[in-house]
Amino acid sequence: MRLLQPCRRGSQLLRPFSLQNRIQFSLPASAGARHFSQKPSELSEKVAETLPTPDSPAKPPLEPVDTTTKMDMQQEDRFVERRIEDHVKEHGEQIPEAQDFQEAAQRLAEAPSAPVPLRLRDPNAVAEQQKDVIIRSRTTTGQVLWPATKEDIEILSQSDQLYPRPFQVEGSVIIRLVRLSDPVTSPVGRMVRNRQYGIRGNEKWQLLATGFVCMLMVFSLGAWQLRRMKWKRDLIEMRRERLAMPRLQVSGSPFPWKDQVPDYVYRVVEVRGVFDHDQEMHVGPRPGSDETGETTPGVLVVTPLRLEDGSTVLVNRGHLPSYRLDRATRKEVPTWVRVRGVLEEGEIPNLVGRYARLKNRPDKKQYLYLLADELAENANARNHEECAQALVTAIDVLYEDDFKAGYRRQLPFTMKHKEDYLLFWADEHTHFNYAMQWFGMGTLFMVMTFYKFVEVYRWRF
Image (cartoon, rainbow, N blue to C red; front, side, top):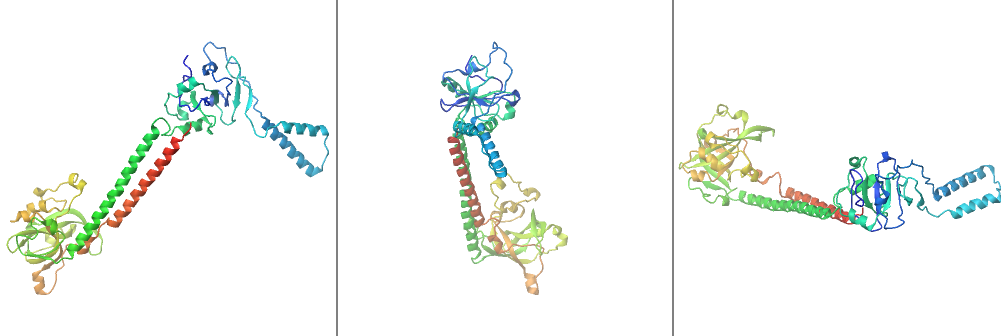
């Protein structure tokens, strides 16, 4: 018979550490097993000799094992002595006989200074010859320790199975190698303790590699936020510098920004012309705010502005509440106006918006995003190429008739201000805070990975 094969379903085999290891059998409590361990009489004894065979005689009835130690006797004597001392304090001193003193002194002299393992004959051991058994603890029932030979260690060291949970091996026998110096002796505690990832085979290196990869990913996110911080800082400085430049006077085509829009974007532009209200386009829906600051649904209104020479420039007139979409509620007549605004290319979508967003449908005049090249398709512009390169976001509109009459009409649009171009939800300081958070998380990953690796590297079953 192969030495140390699993006795029943659920047996687990683990790695050894030295020839001083012991083989531990964890039996279910329902089987009536007690926790005791055997001190080997000879290292060459085979574990198979202790296991029952089909031809072996029936197991004799279990007999109780006396587990009283000398330390228990010493404690009982000390308890009696304290009772005597209390009695003397209450009733006075009574001189006992000399023989009593001699017996008590003899018992104290024979008692050891520290408890030692009790060696006795185990009447329940199934073997041809009875062996010495070491009872190590009264609380870890269901375990029997037998000496492990070199052959046993070689067989058990080839197993890499995980420790099961207690309920997974109920009614089964577990065979494994343990160290007598290991403080964990409870079968349930040992299962829970040794089931964690990283203590078998190359798992500790896999744990280290996984933690290192996670740490690099988190640190890379922190570096990305630092790059975003620099980009946002440069963008704000560029906008602030260009908004402070003298405004451009545009009276006709060709426009100053033709074929070089990046050099003129966010410059203040002033144009004079007439709005073509029949070609008005709506971009949205978009949330906006009214005079009281309340958020209202609506759209952005983009209207072509016809200049004196017949050329066209697109003007984003601002946010229009949804209840003013009907042209009948805001009657407008063609007249000369002066528009002062900021030159923009439109809304620049990010990576998700570029590939995953809904598209504008110029053929049906349905626009979700403010893009100059797509809006220009319905502008009927003679200079279509120039009109599709950029648009003007109005910050002020002056009707010449109003200037002559000495009053200023109230417009239903909510226009942007120059200061709005310098405000961001996530400015450079926000990106810096995000970067520090990612770096902190990466450092935490590094510390936890290193601590866990050192712990499992020095682990002992």
